[in-house]
Length: 206
Ligand code: PRP
Ligand code: URA
Image 1 (cartoon, rainbow, N blue to C red):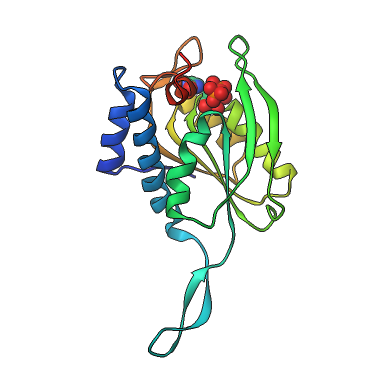
Image 2 (cartoon, rainbow, N blue to C red; image 1 turned 90 degrees about the vertical axis):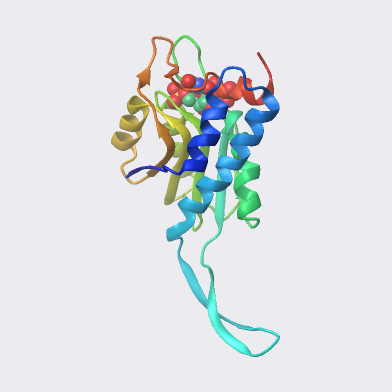
């Protein structure tokens, strides 16, 4: 399933990020804020369990989240979405998957991975601002599946139809959430209109 989260605040903040004159500080802050807004929408249907608690007045039956949530940022750019989401869900555990895309072949290369122990039973949210060819996201999904993850969601800011197609074909069990579905990829594998190189804009490396 593909869901594009059309919300005026998300769109407004994404527009600020897309502007070429937006500097690192504002780029990061807007990404943080969009991460939180997307998390609110994505967690709407999370399973809850009934619990018995005591308020200062009397006992009551109510509900809590049933499952652990594990965030999996794809390094580097995915790190930019961790704060915003974990501010909203403070109990999240954070795994790390290090992948870079070869500039010539556009193929993903793995350079790091680290997971918390209970990934099999958790809700896993892979986060990365950009879904371009889909190679990195598909590789990250393969990696968490190898660890036993079963309930996986892919959360990206900007997606290209090419990348969405790859994930839908290779991982039909994974729900995809985007803030915007852009037009297509250019000859260098960049999303157009897109927002440029997310990692470089977050970390000021260009
Ligand atoms: C970017 C982006 C995604 C990937 C998307 O990362 O953050 O991970 O490219 O492209 P794809 O869908 O074609 O695989 P990059 O490899 O530039 O690494 P970085 O985050 O360290 O900058
Ligand atoms: N990675 C990015 O950071 N931006 C793109 O447009 C495509 C891949």
